[in-house]
Image (cartoon, rainbow, N blue to C red; front, side, top):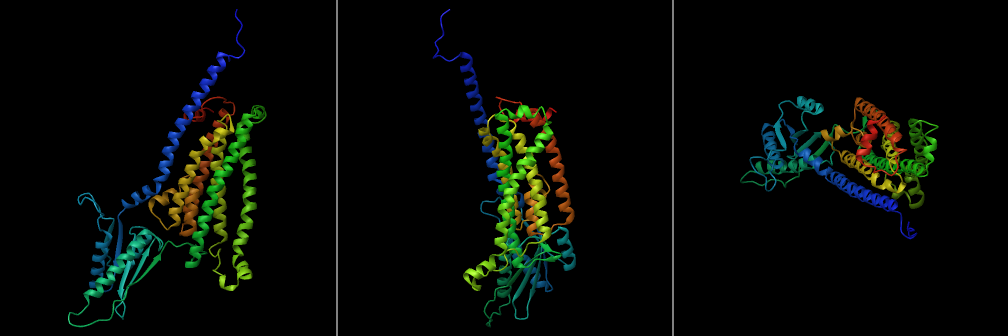
Length: 439
């Protein structure tokens, strides 16, 4: 029997290396395609929101004591708001606004509160001839519809002024119409609507809270997944699984590593909030009283902090369970990056919808997302910061989030039990689904 060349590798080793390389290539190719698809969905999410919003016909009620002024206002508003975009087919294009004259202002106000109509425009002519327009709506003054209606208000003022010009006399110079937006969905503090300064502070704080939630989920969720993957790659998990159940190990990882990460988060956040609260005092001491810009935490309250804490913890637990189950399916911590990106994109989608909600949008899509996990921690928190949310809505969102955590915990425990002893196999979607079916 001829001796084997020691420099030639064993055929079995070569075959395993080739199989490993092919598997890894297929894994990265498949994950790249999936991630490209998910990234595309996240990128077009704002467009999808706008497209869904465009399909909604918004009713605008005109309330005016002067019948002639009301007819003129309705005609101008309908012309300006329902102007077809370039290239729109007359047969298929639908008017986004339905402008009508309300016979009773009280009835229109009730319809606005019930969500039947999208806005009530009260139009009146003052003693000096200036047109005064007040828009009551569920959205904020910076929303797209409020801005569009401001253009309509200006057009109403111009047409009313020109229609009342005598043919053979002079008249005072044109005065732009007064336009004011009164939102019935303004955030409240102890039942009192916030003023403009407090509302602006709430917007900034809401943006900070949502960003902190996103960063915490991505960073500390990866901590949990990395801890699980490190124990699996070092074979320590094989010894631990014989002494504790998969449920106990999963809970220990989420609570232990998650608590360590949240402790770091609290250590970072508390000094930052203290400095933010003392910003005016610091500016006065260093730069003088002229640099004081108002209370940066003017919209802060105990219920808001409580709501932030509840949605922060529930959202983190939900994502941490998924990250832990994901970490048990990789043989090396280096493979976590491929599997963690879809979760990051899901969290990013929730962040984008929350930013839309912070901008004053209160459409059906935003309201629905505030109840659907895993988007509800982001979106409901944003709605709490800038709009009026009923207590039952907050309670329903919390209940659905807790129910989702319970379901995810059961599935994640099954996946964790199957993944801790799974070595050298492709951690794809099929393996995840098979592990979830096994118990």
